[in-house]
Amino acid sequence: MDEEKKQLTELLEIAEYMVLKGSNPYDEDNESTSAYSLSGDLILKRLFDGQLSYNEDFLELLELEEFTDTKIKHKKCHKLIVETRTGKTIGELNKSFGNRTKEEIEEFLLWVYGKEIEGIQKKAYFSKLAIAKRTLRKDISRLYETNETKDFTLIVHQTKIKVHKLILLARSGLFKGLFISTLETKQVQDFTNKSVKTLEALIKFLYTNKLDELNQDNQILEELSDAQEYYQLNPKSMLRYLIEKKQNYSKN
Image (cartoon, rainbow, N blue to C red; front, side, top):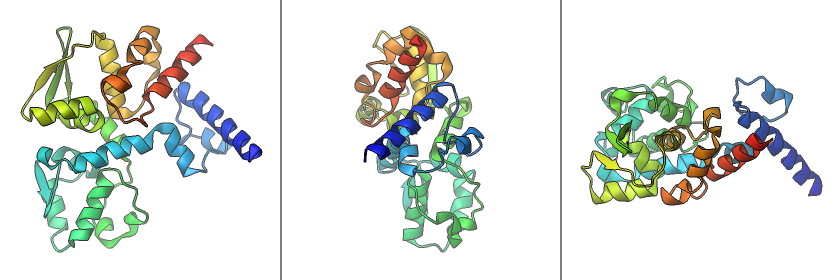
């Protein structure tokens, strides 16, 4: 058991170092992955990059029917999420699912919102859709740069930050509560006294689940330190952990 613990600690230390240097040790395209023998335990992989909490947030979003705006056959869903994840329009998907069962449609949407379903790529209904191999986080991260579909404004010290309402809804309990109580709201003033750069760093984290090297500014990290509690992020969110590691890294 002590040997296993030692090996796990060594893996985490290597992974932490690589991520803090801006490299993802679990990226299949990363040549260092095989060199450090980090291709193994899926649980370790998910634990480290916060994927479990990230996917859970979007799976919970699927259950919030009051915010859905379209359907695939009988099942309500969110047009932005489904089309971003699949690269298909809702019309194309409904045509493809013309004679598919209720169970297949529900399984497909669970995959769209982040549930790992073993062997789904090989299933007949899925393979016919010709969807490229992709991950939830990478697809949602691309939305961060997609300004034309942003539909909500966060006002911080007179600066307007445009975002996708669904991302805030999925990732923050604070915003979820706000949106549930005022369904039609289009903007909100942030009263936390945090700087614009800090809120921009937080928003980027909600999309990408990462803190990039730019955010090693100590003031930003300090202002983010209570964000997990204030914005009611998933308790398993990696935000606090990443902040602590970046603070420690910047001291060395």
